[in-house]
Length: 294
Ligand SMILES: [Zn+2]
Image (cartoon, rainbow, N blue to C red):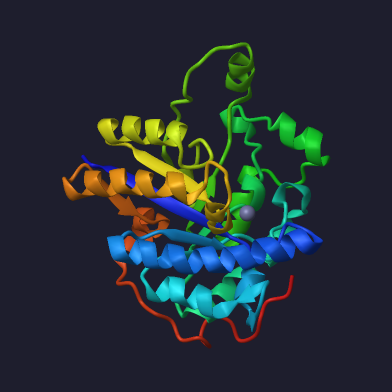
């Protein structure tokens, strides 16, 4: 079986940052996203844009860019939710989480005319999942009370109408062993089904440089699934997410695709219920009668 690659872009137009930095990042993000959309279209690569809902409300630069969000969907990319204003979900009570998820989905469906079924958490939060040994001690230490963990988030997502989620978690004993110098990748499942949701585990090193390329090579040869993510604005920075790493990585992946070693996919491709239905555009007025409140 050929490997599958999911390429997520977290699109947030400066939400999550403050002041002048937020504005600078938002301006870079809009520029980089136009270039990225051209790049993906020229190579026929579908991606997933995990969009902060507030960005899609209207056209008002630099923090709102409904037209750009619409363009993502028009070019065949999947638009997923990345919260409403880039909240840290682990710190929020479940009823508030559910309200934010509904509001974000509504704004994104209005902007794109497509059903929104997928979610990727801002800050990759929450990360606690006790049943899988992930205590998320670092998240608790840095951000205080953990009010929503992964199982609670999944219930909120289900109630708010979502079907897939990108999740990040690390079993605590493996983190401890790694700190002691043990070098091994966690070999948990790539895809899980819980509460009627399909979960795609994100465990790639951040960025597109050597560690990610190595991780892809291992996944391709094993016919597994690789979930990689980045931020459009960081393509313009000197970081592991820079264009100078992204472009050669994509050249390799596209060559592997062209010889049948991998396929590019988006999360809705893994949702068996959605996959059975023909993909439909929705009318911009038939999702909710009025915007849900948070
Ligand atoms: Zn984010």
